[in-house]
Image (cartoon, rainbow, N blue to C red; front, side):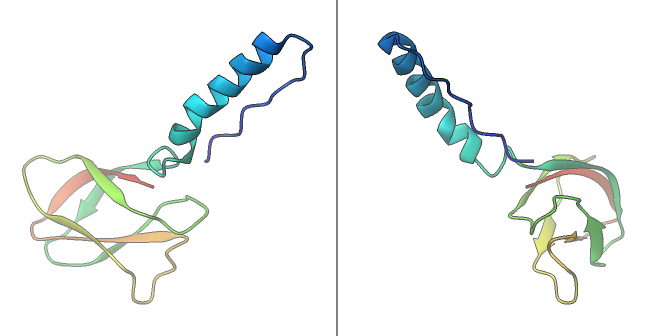
Length: 105
């Protein structure tokens, strides 16, 4: 879920107006970062060399993913779906059977 914009109020004091503007500018970059608007997927069991469609519940097409927990170093590939709806699923493939955690954004 995207971070909501900061609500501003109108005050007669110009210092408060400057402070509100500074806070909005300082947080704008983090609010726009696609990594923030993600979801964790835990305990995803992936068989060796078989594409698995994993539901992500983002409510939009996924942008990318980061493997956050794995028992060893391995290659996990998030691939563009062939038949799968990217607004509902991310397709993952690995070279060995493994259970991983993934942050999808």
